[in-house]
Length: 303
Image (cartoon, rainbow, N blue to C red; front, side):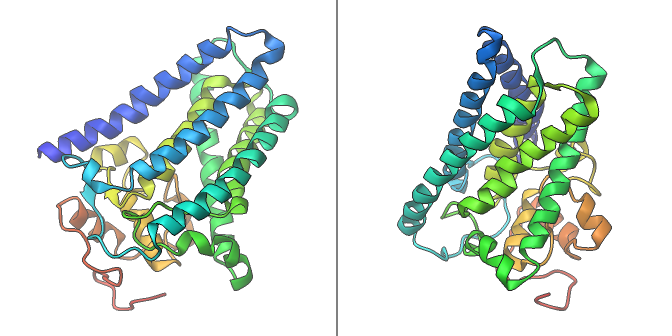
């Protein structure tokens, strides 16, 4: 019970207190600068958020850092790739992503997306949040599924699937996938929000980035479940909310569970792992899966 309460409080505090406070604080910080320079400062802030995401991505891969929180999804298995080789390749790829993301963000927030620093109207702010998350999730699902569609397209995504259990080795991706799944995803999302709902509140911009880069990506690849039942209800309920277990199954089965922010599109398209809920319940009762081939109430071992 203690582990359950601490895990729930930790995740709740990130989503409801830490991230919103950070977004609000950054908003106040940027407002101290002349209007003509604010877009440039925003690009710099997004760059720092991206760098910190890389740090968190390494930190969260070690379950021993969470001795009293979280639930292991898979028992530790030998990593598919040597850690030093992964880090070497990742540093090279990240340098390319950093350059391209700065370029994309500079164009987006300098010319394409109208960002407002005015005091947000509550209903409009909430509306922008919900719309941005819906578009983010939709973009990711279909881009992700497209990358699994054929052998040629899968070459872009293959590197990310070289590691089946993310604990001893950080997740890895190639620059093009990083741009499609993270940078361009958020830019396209906020551009659509801008078109449909007018100028985008700076708080929505910052929160969208940190929710995606500081929670979904690093914790989602940690092999440690942090999304307890109360957290799932906070994020839409068991039918909608995704979990670490959910994405961990995608990495071992490939053809299931494509969603990131939610299970909505997987539910609609029939791509949810049939035994997902049973496995999730087992994980949060501290019974991790013992093998990447393990299935519950599901006869076929591959799809």
